[in-house]
Image (cartoon, rainbow, N blue to C red; front, side, top):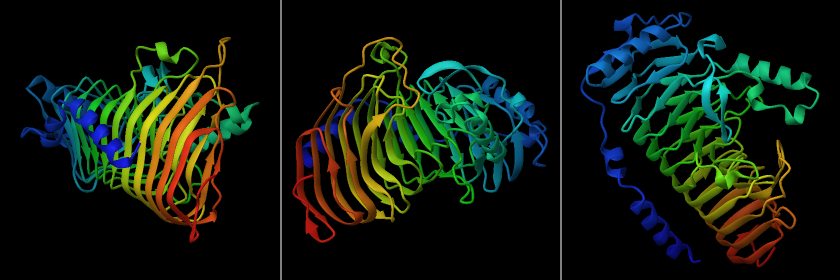
Length: 430
């Protein structure tokens, strides 16, 4: 499908699916504010402030709503639970920091990695809070380094390190937003998360704008520090964000396992827009998986990839029926030495067929257009043998310099190269 026709159809679907979108863009914090210091919070980087901060949230909820304000200073806290009509603002110089004592994150039923289980909640927990607004120039700090160290130590000591469960080590996400509409997250820095940074589950009409997601350069691989996990959501826009993380920058997710399509808790991921973002470090600009079922109508555009990050990364989970369709990456500028433009491969880590027959999957209608700059490789596309139907891939309007220029693409029906220049020469086929 031509890119312009695809775009018209995709944005029409996006607009029709977004009745609350205008409210999300126009939303402003209510005038009533409550500073956490007025409720006894102490900025000494050691006092556990969970109770006074929760008291501020509860007070505003009981009196008609408002905005909890974190002033300048380092405030340590455990899990916080927001209520309808209560927002959060981090002033310049404010740091809301995770405790590294997991007793401050008592386990509860939560959504994580494609299912519900008993695990630690996040630092910021927002459920059924339409119009929630997280804003400011401050920082959510996961204080992740000792947790990451513990994870790698336990993984190394396990009998099967390659399949060491991510949930084996207690740790907190920085923010979990679920079952909410018209939410805005803007301006804040997410730093050193113990686990995923921003997890969106069953949300609609969410705007994440001008947010930074960061881990330290001197830590080789902070485990599972995804920037944004879009889980079973619709109408999500990520605009002007910066990613330098230890795992996928943005991951679109759903359910998993051979019966995933019957999972009513995981509707399709649809109408995702990512634009004007910068990617310095991470596993993928926008990754499909690790757990995912139906994902459709995804546009990534006008982005800069300055680190060795895969642009389009589609994981073909071997135990899960998947359908990925109507995907567009366009106007992407590359400035790296080892990143790939596309990776579509079988992914079998943690696979469990549960005694069922291996499922069939589909990847349909992917376009990459307007790709330019320097990178490591064109990449590789390979289906799960006999179980993945891949069709209608178009690569167009490329002008790139690659260390490994050859496209390694197999198993694709209706594969097109149009005006693709690699290392000064046209590429006509894989």
